[in-house]
Image 1 (cartoon, rainbow over the protein chains, first blue to last red):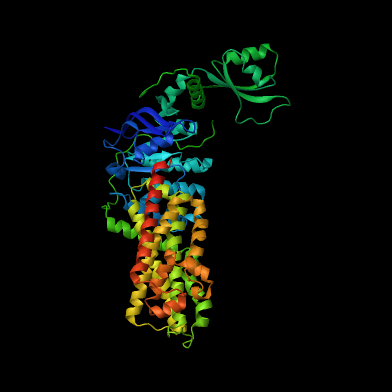
Image 2 (image 1 turned 180 degrees about the vertical axis):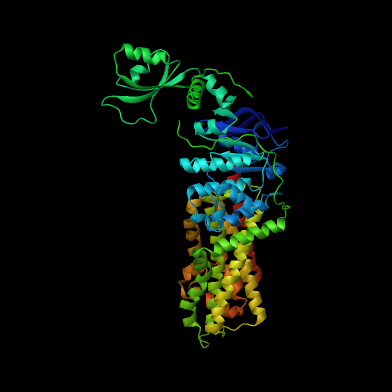
Amino acid sequence: MSVVELEQVAKVYGDVVAVDGVGLSVDRGEVVALLGPNGAGKSTLFELLLGLVRPTAGRARVLGVSPGGEARAQVGAMLQHAGLPDQVTVAELVRLVGRSYPATLGLDAVLERVGLAHRHRHTVSTLSGGERQRLLLALAIVGDPQLLLLDEPTAAMDLEARRRFWEHTLASVDDGTTLVFATHDLAEADAVADRVVLLHHGQVLADATPTALKRLVPGCVVTLVTDAPPEVIARWPGVERVDPAPDGGSSPPAHARLAVSATDAESVVVPLVRSGHDLSGLGVAEADLETAFVQLTRSATAGATHPTLEGT
Amino acid sequence: MSGTATAPRTGRRRQRSTRDEVVRRDPVGLLGAQILVELRSHARSLDFVIGAIALPMLLYAMFGLPTASPSNVLPDGSHVGTMMMVSLCSYGVVSLAIFTFGEDIARDRGRGWARTMRATPLPMWSYLAAKVVLGLVGAVLIVTSTAGLAVVAGNVRLDPGEWLRLGGTLLVGVLAFSTLGFAIAYATRPRAATAIANLLFLPLAFLSGFFVPLSELPAALRDIAVWMPTHHFGQLAWRQVAPAEGVEAWAGITPASAGTHLAWVVGATLVFGAIAVLAARREGVTRRG
């Protein structure tokens, strides 16, 4: 039985189509990342799965029943812009929310999982941003849910806090929970998810494993240091886009460290050498999830079609 | 894109573990837990303890005790210190109702706690019911602390029946005006709720004669006071400790029948309640995630 099943689900607010005919099926124990630009419909999908809003069209099922109602007792969630009351202690909050579920993990077990056992007597006002996020995770898992929905859970965290967050979250997933999460961090999706669902303007643009999604986009990313103007490189055949390389370091004067997405390395290196420009620090990597994401959403905006790899 | 630290996926997943602790869903227990959380968290807040609970007593100490000599009586013999105590208790409970329900709930909306609750099976009824209980407990504390000071240092003497009727009237006031608080909480933007609550409450309290007896204010203000539901609530409270002549001397307004004052309070409760329900529904309909 699928834990989540959406059939041609649409949600319209006035003249805004937030979700447009989404079909999605998530099996027990799967970890699914929802990717998409702001306004792609990720948060609306979570609200549909929680039963907070009803679909305008189509059918949504969670654990075999309509979202909300009895299904709520088996679903844990962290929504975007969620907050906590300041003067309540960590233990009080976890106990309170735990009481609303028919079955709960023990307080100690939950706090141990999210790394807040030592903070159980502290009020929320004394917690750091990362600790607050982990407390929200504790509230999401205290009911021992079968389905965990996390909407951009690590958005405000630094790298260390993210690492710890996923460590704790995946401990819950390893316990058999199905996890659906939204993120803008493609490396995070690549590292954590079994499947990536790419949303764009409320529609599913791609639904595949991270590996299959990367294969959808042929080519590679060439990093190099050169004095050739990026706008010139961008015009060469086979070059998709030119960006500043993320970990640039120092470059000689009038040189820049660039990340060039291209069909193959030759289409960058050969014309660069022939044109007589400097070339150093050369590195070639396969197209990553970010490249796939950018190209797929650009193509969708331009009206091109890409194959959707359902259940790959 | 590289550089994001994520934990590596672990290997095979285990079967779901046996649940460590099973708690049956128990509405009474849930409500009890929610009430405890409300009471404890507010007890930790100095703003609430001083600004809402202790302030009426402090105001009575500053402005009531100097007038509380046994010989300071109204023409009908009613004790001024007692009337002042009732005024400040009325101020306290109306203030509590408006701010506990209005400002508190708006703050919970503004900081995202309301949204977090929506992501859990916590029912809204238990959250609102816990706020009501908080309001009632707060009102009991306001009345007992202010009345305690009035008895110990203000020469206030009432028989048990009068104390019970006064206490009951003041507790009903919390419930009645809580609807105004709910209306403010849901009809305004969270950030504006405090300002709007103050904007409404201060004129209401002043024009109702809770700070200064209306008999000492210009007649024009007394003409406005009769349109204030809080003034009618005050009339009901004063009537529990003084005869109609005493209330007239204190308020400068001839009291109407108890039924008329009650109708005003009930009517206001219904109107504010309807606004609150409509505003809460509108928020549910228009809210976008």
